[in-house]
Image (tube, rainbow, N blue to C red; front, side):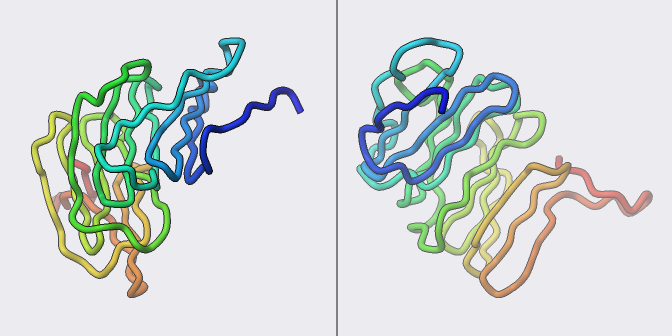
Length: 174
C-alpha cells in the first residue's frame, strides 16, 4: 500500500483521471471529494455540490481533467471546475435513478453532457442547452467513451446515439 486515507462517509462512486492521477469520490450523503495524488497530505474537505442530500451515484472527469460531472440519485447533475466549491452548471435528468450507478458522461471533445434519467436519456450542450431528451425503457447505463454515445436499457436494448450520414453510412456525434 502506498497511501491510505479515511473517507468522511460511505463511498458510492469514484473515478480517476488517467493522466493526472486525480481521483473524485462521491458519497452516500451527497458530498464529493477530490484527491490529487500529486499533493501530499489529506484530500480537501468533501463538499456538497448537489442541493439534495441524496447519494452521488456517478462521477466523471473531463478528458482534459479540469471538470467534474456528478449525478445524484434524484437525477440532479453538477458540472464543476476542479478546485471550485460551486458548480458552474446545474442540470436535472427526469426522475430518480433506481437501476444502480452509471456515471454521466462528457462527449470526447467536452462540448456535450450525456446523462440518464429514470426512463430517459438526456443530452445537453456544455452551456446547458437541451439537445435531445429521449424517453426509453429504464436506462441501466450510458457512456461516451467511444466516438458515439451509447445507452443500455433494462429491456435488453443497446442504442448508439448520433446523426447518421446517409451518403457515407457513418455516424457523427453532433
